[in-house]
Image (cartoon, rainbow, N blue to C red; front, side, top):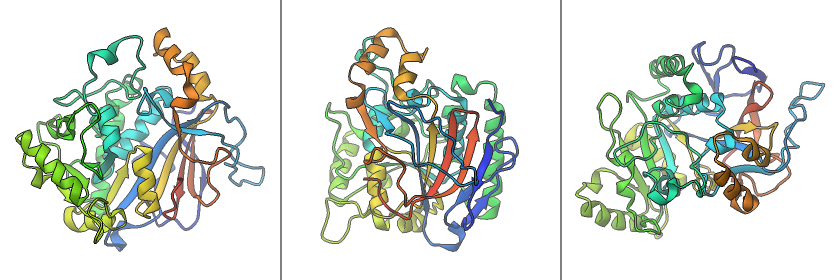
Length: 381
C-alpha cells in the first residue's frame, strides 16, 4: 500500500487549489471549485466515505488515454442502519481517518443533520452495548460530557488505525490551517464551529432533546468551549427555545433561524451560505451528513462540491463478513438484512452521476480512491 496518496488526475478550471503541508499530501493540494475570497458566501463541501454494496469495483479508474472512468461503480452505500457513521463502511482504513481529520480541521464550520447527531452524538444506552446489537460506525475516540461524537480533527486522530501517524497528521492539519488563515481562506477562529441542522426542531422519537448531545456541553482538549449552533426554521426555533430553556440553556445564543418568506416550517437552505458568511464569517464549511440533510443542501444549490472517499476493491458485504472488529453476533445482525439497512448515496444504482465534474482523483493503495467533484448544486436525490 502506498504511504502517501498519489494524484492520478487534476482538472483544469479549479477555482483555487489550496496548499497542504508535505506531511499530509506531498505533490497534491486541496481543490476548491470556488474561491471564498472572491465571494460573499461560505463554500460548503459535502463529504462521504462509501463502498459498493454487493460487487467490488476493481476496474481501472483511468483509461489507456488517461481519462477518468468512474462509470462502473455500483450501488454506493452512504449509511448502514445500526452502524451509523463511516467506520464499518471504511473498514477502519487509516487514510479515511486522516481525510476526516483534514476535513474537520481545515474549515470554519462542520454542519451535520440532527438525525446523525441523535445516532452518534450521545452515549449509547445499555441496550446498544450488547453483542447482539450492531456497533456504531464511528470509531472509539474523545467523547463529550454526554459521551457522544465530536466533529473535530482530534476525534479521528485518536482512533487506533491512526496511532502511528496521529502526531504527524495533527501537526500537519494545524500548520495547514495557519497557512490557509494567512491566505484569507479561513476565518481567525481556532477550531471549526459545530452546526446542527434540524428543520422541525423536534425531539428524537425516544424523547431525547438535541440540547443534550455531547457537543453542547463538551470542551476542546485545551479546555475552551466548543462553538455550537443549531440551524432551524422559525417553527423549529420555537420548539428548540422551549427545550433549551427546560435544560437551563440560553437558546437565543445558539439558534440560526432562516426561513423563506411565508414558509415558517422550512429552512431557507439556498440563502444559508450567504448568511453563514455575513453572520459568522464562515468561509469554508464541511457538510458531514447525513444523506437526507446533504441532499436538501444540494437541491438548494448550497453545496459547491462533493468529496468522496471510495473504498472500491471489497464490497460492503465482503467487508462485513471479514471485519475483525465485529463480533459474530454483530456480524450476523448486519448481514441478516443488509440491503434493507443500506442507504445509497445516489438513487440510480449504476454509477456516479454524469453531471458531476471531477476536479481531482487521489489513489491510496489499491483499495481507495478519493474523488473531488464539482456538483453545480445538483442533488443526488
